[in-house]
Image (cartoon, protein in one colour):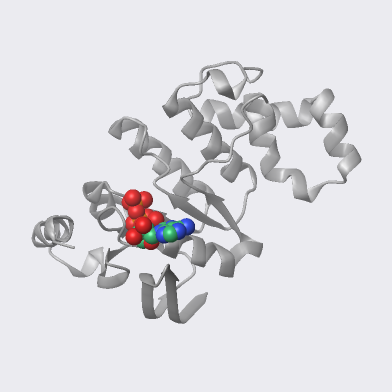
Length: 222
Ligand SMILES: Nc1ncnc2c1ncn2[C@@H]1O[C@H](COP(=O)(O)OP(=O)(O)OP(=O)(O)O)[C@@H](O)[C@H]1O
């Protein structure tokens, strides 16, 4: 589906990402792990730039519009598909079909607040699920997420990960939860100082041994 080669990203002369070659096949579920500052977000954004036409991004920054409702923030995922006039009408009088689609999604995301609730009044975990909803609403074949469950309890995180998997053929996700990476994903890529430290298919490895390798990745000195 995609091969990137010789990707070097620097900020102020400091290497953030240095990948010689990385191939991603359609249908893969890939977790990207590594300690804070190892280059996960930089890689996620690079992959999104390359795959943009068929991917939805759920970024760490979220980019929610504080004064708009849950409905509007999720509906924004589809803005570019419609004429501006349709979007304007829907902003003022949300159409029943769109209200129905968004409400199905908020139920799946276990968002119990009303769809009319302004995002500024939501908790961190609720905001994260609204951002996730906006990415899911796009119904793209590829889902790219940057720690999309970091504010959720682990059980809910796993339930929502299953939902994301059911809705997308290919999933690429930066995570700090290494147990989730090994238990739920096909392939795990470990980054350290912008470089790939390992890249394994979970079916080919001894998970317990790899749990130690993952732990070591987080304990590496900078
Ligand atoms: N816009 C920027 N300007 C300057 N430096 C940046 C910028 N974005 C990232 N960096 C630097 O690039 C390196 C990689 O950052 P990145 O955000 O990709 O790491 P990360 O693994 O996603 O971290 P985290 O787990 O904390 O989100 C870090 O040293 C970071 O400080």
